[in-house]
Image (cartoon, rainbow, N blue to C red):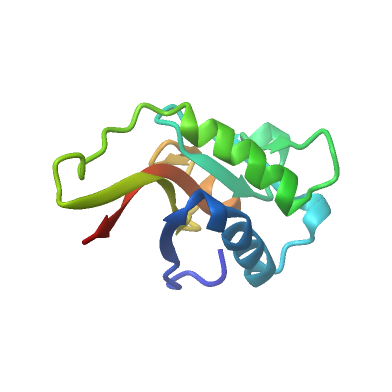
Length: 131
């Protein structure tokens, strides 16, 4: 994403997703017209900048963090994720977890095709608010 060893791992509620995507895209420095996506078999929504032949899909519109965040939200809400906090004393809601993709030279890692061109992966995750 940024450098080979840089750590980027955050979570939040769906209302924070657009800001998180904007931050990640701004930090990586890739021109917005080059940003592509892929969805892994286990449901991770990934942003990157590789060629379509490398597993990355071009958006059929100009990249816009608001539009993309709404697409990602819909995708995450369709994932079958168990709420680990269902019986805790507090409340929980479906949110997201965003991680930098390891920029390794590999055909595939963690279900991500050609991860060298990856920026971040986004997956559904419950967030918890304790009492």
